[in-house]
Length: 122
Ligand SMILES: [Zn+2]
Image (cartoon, rainbow, N blue to C red; front, side):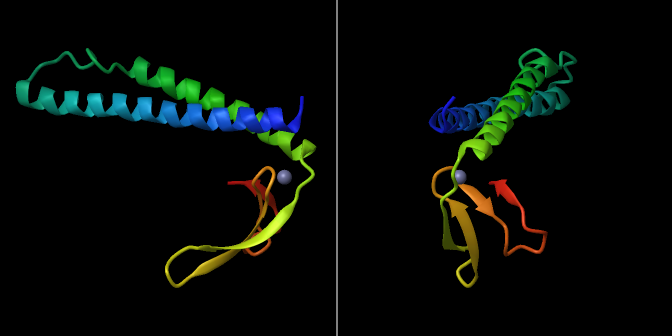
């Protein structure tokens, strides 16, 4: 498989993870409201609209998709002939941070951090 294939898959997995996060947050919102409502109405049916297994279903899919993304990152790391560029990013209006990243796969090089030099994806 080509580098482009893995870059496309990683981008797709990022989209899926984002959507799954939305599903999890939405179910948790229903669950929180249900708990609040139960306190007022003294009902005992806790899991009519947001049972834990619904939330867990999406959490499992998210964890699985993150594993697939990790595999993509490993493949990308092997295939990419990194083309690093240096750049300054603004952390706040007064503070900028120097970063180095690959223009092809967006890998970052943490040489300016306190930890030992290490490549990573952000
Ligand atoms: Zn690269």
